[in-house]
Length: 307
Image (tube, rainbow, N blue to C red; front, side, top):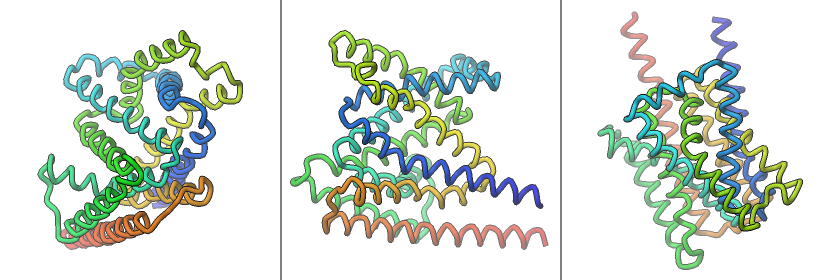
């Protein structure tokens, strides 16, 4: 019992640090304001692969990466997920550099309920009444975001693109029985040749920021660490906690992003954004309360069966 409590404590610590790290990454990317978003993405991929390969080699698990290449189905799926995660990363970076972190935050707030919708459509999962209400409210909140399209261009697409790419990413990754670190390593390996080619292209056309500016070069070198460490902490923490408990901590990141957007980056928050955020928070409240109710219900059912 004592060991279980200790493991749970470590799990909570790892998960909180992971989500805090993800929540604070906008400050890091904002420091790269003058760098092309595609170059930032390329560095994020290349430095991540170097960092991840080092860890996998240290753990003597290179053979697990090689095994994936002997499965055409798994490899094809990981090629798709690598495209999805790269689009997600690029959208997120672009949003921060172009003062749309608030929309990015909204995207991660709606992500859990967006995943419910994907499960309903593709996995034929059923929804209870509360989940249907949460989904309906979220859809209304997204529609309200799109009422700003005439004033802010395509920025309402940011939350949908972020939630959509990450949702489909999670949906496809479920099909591949591989640890997160090995999956991410393969995904970055797939993207690495494209990223390297783009870096060479920038260098040949004298547009490469890396090595041209010492401070920015140092920051770009940390792109792999910024990407990989929170994920490793998340994976470690998730193994020590029930998935339901992990889910309750995921709102740390978008909450921090929203606070950073308003109070540090001074992004404008108007009545439309307030209304859409309020609706999605109501939807999340229903979603969380329903999750707690289901957990308690399942726990009582198991106790009754045991007794």
